[in-house]
Length: 418
Ligand code: 3BY
Ligand code: FES
Ligand code: FE
Image (cartoon, rainbow, N blue to C red; front, side, top):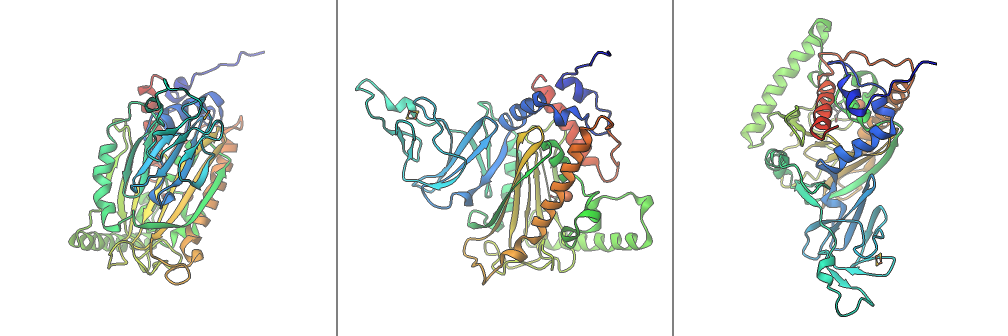
């Protein structure tokens, strides 16, 4: 019998040929999954929610991330706070995953009772020598940018979140995203590795064939293209797009919007992100089937509907902010072959369903797109676990960001000694 060669996680990623996919074991193996969660979800900044998850004081949203769990809560002063979901007595979980509303956080085990500011207010039978001030809930490094709640579970939170904040805060500001509500939420579990979910999101090679709803509002250059393959018709479309893009960018700039592309993705980035203000096709207003706004009550005090799509990627999320609504998706790995994808559709806090918007027009593009991508991720996960799988070549025109993601993944593992 031939000997089975066992490669370590680090050896596997270093064996990836530049410009090629990752070896299948990086998607399927349990030990790789556990290290991934530890490095990419416990030591990096990750998106875990939006401020509208906890609109009122006492609102709680609990999010599990691997073996860790965090409680996001709106305190009595309207601040969003985050704590580790571990009782400071004997460690019981204070809250199950999901949303609730509380006056105080009461442990189900022996009823230790914590204020929304994390301090321990009540613990029976502990005697007069017991000092409750040492037993406050453990806070979590948190950065709120626009409405996005980023947390880092590591003691040493990477400092370059400041770059994301400095770039995105002025871009989100005109949209007043804290004054929004969740019109719709969706949770899907994709039977595929988290890296396949992210790789799928980093390219639009697959978009024209698989996302008819999304491509109603996408324009040709967003897909990436090989100049040799362009038909005359596509060339014309591309030229039209470039003219339109230049005109839109100039008019947004005149109105004070900041939209230039910023990329912080390479090996020197810890908290990677990319942003750009994308032009929308057709009527140019929103990512809807009609390409017109889905909500007639625009964000903040916006007057213009044609603000394109302020797009943000991080290593566990993708966001599209239009004048009337935003779609924010983030992922949490559950198992080597299972990834949770949560999407939230935000509208102005005062927008009224049935008057200013309806759920179907608002959600149909991304519900369809998520369903299509789920299928693509699942068939790819299965294929990469087949003994016949050998990593293929990326398109140098349409899959450069997939290659970049693989390089960043390798660099971050290396930085953590993997
Ligand atoms: O829109 C996104 O978030 C990504 C990038 C292009 C296609 N894909 C669905
Ligand atoms: Fe929470 Fe005892 S474990 S009160
Ligand atoms: Fe897709």
